[in-house]
Image 1 (spheres, rainbow, N blue to C red):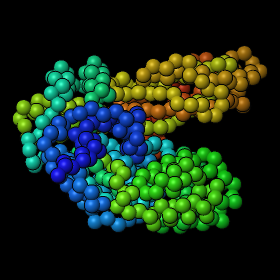
Image 2: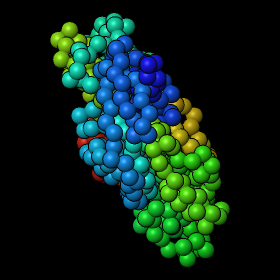
Image 3: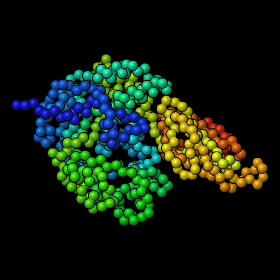
Image 4: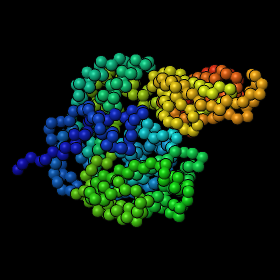
Length: 467
């Protein structure tokens, strides 16, 4: 009798993924799995197991298979701001397992805030058919860690909060990864994420009406399709972004659902979805739909091997700081009631490891960056000079205003915002607005000081500071 065929996807277990601020997307497995390094060594000895479809495979002895009860589960549409959705995902592992590609517990040193925007509102839903789970078996044979990983960690200094140490650990995590895949869920999934910018006209309530109208009839989504003729809905369709991940099921329906838009042919899209959902069976539900991760440091520590503890301590301390960084979207807005045609404004943040102020895109008006450093942004406004009837006298009758989109990466501790306005005669305003994910820090036209250092409790907590 021949030996069982190896289940090659078991090799995902014990490999790393990179989940860092500014770049990780816990909803997209393809991106997460793009870069992998071996952290936990899998046993060369094999166990023979029987999968739900009746086929027999060999898997490493330090992994284990759990067959699911099967059946299809609908995880209903949830509409939340980026801040609220990240909080729910961070505190509810079963929620993240159902709605995202990566599942992480509260102790795993990861925040879903890294995958979501504080300036957006999201609609998420999924339909799951879970067939089986594969996971590392920490209770079986001793956990063996890649010696090259341990050597790389040994070269790192003990963690402390300074720029040189921060840079060394960021290079390490980008190379080796931040987390280990400890469990893989296989089955079939339709996973939807839709988002749009929060504005005065695109509120959370309006977005919920729009996204439910667009996906009306998909699983248990029920919306009012009569609003599709409104100008508000048309504006939503032009600006919203959607990501549909379909894994498992029949090839034709999977491709159709992944590439088409419901509004192009709502009836056809619903029929294709129903066909996909109704034809799920053990033979076409063996795709990877979710991974559960823990930080590399935590994995080393819970191995129980005291030789790994020095490396575990270093990595846990460093990633504890890095994973607590928050990425917040906002705007810098300016006003000018003065005689200069090109007034310049500077906003800078207290420089600590991980802090960043980044220009993202133009907003409204003619305001452009002229100097960009990691924690400093200087902007130049093309203004309409205010006419003056008398020399040295400025009448604020026709000012110029503009704003740009920016992104701030910040620790959650107290900080200081430095604002510089033009020194030429006139009235000027400079505002860093990170609401709702962070504060509004301002030096308005009523503030006669041209240079201000404004302390804030945190750039990751809402509030208003300045004059």
